[in-house]
Length: 228
Image (tube, rainbow, N blue to C red; front, side, top):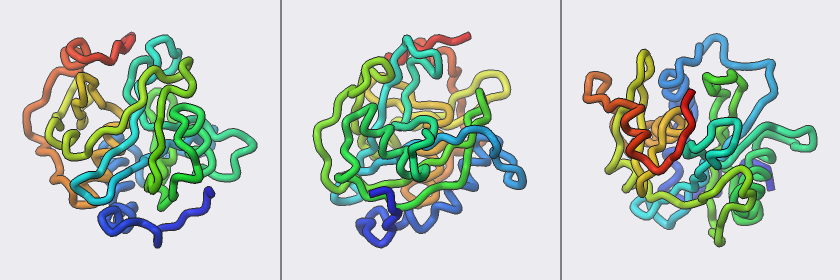
């Protein structure tokens, strides 16, 4: 089940599969990853970009809200994922396992399509491998591990794009999305943005466009993030 099967991508998702190298390059640019020296050496992690829907207009993406009590990234909106365990055969296997543990999404209902190159979360510099997949048979999902996540939901891609903004704090500037009162930002928003732009489902944000204050946006959100 952890075998990549890009030929099984539905027609509407094929542009994203075909342009994963471009998505990787754009994500690294957004995250400030050195193309010549991508993250390596530390324990790897994987996240699942799980798209559902019968057409581009119906496309949805599975997201989680990390519990505000978590030590790591409390209160953030995230893609299902986590560190690669010794028993994981691959980063794809890790992403599928984590999706099951966090959301109850079943591996047998998911078709892995491709993997972006290694990215990193600035807080720890661990290499993270986003796995693009199609949820060909969606089933009910819920916070399967309430210690880690307290909300699980599918967000419409069109709705995310309709509420796409740029946020900034100090030297940081990056894409963000509003969804049902949650603010999707940081690593997760950069990965989503890179795939949507590479697939030509959206134009790049204007780097000289308006920027909303990140702290103010988080205060107005439902995230309940603990900021240092």
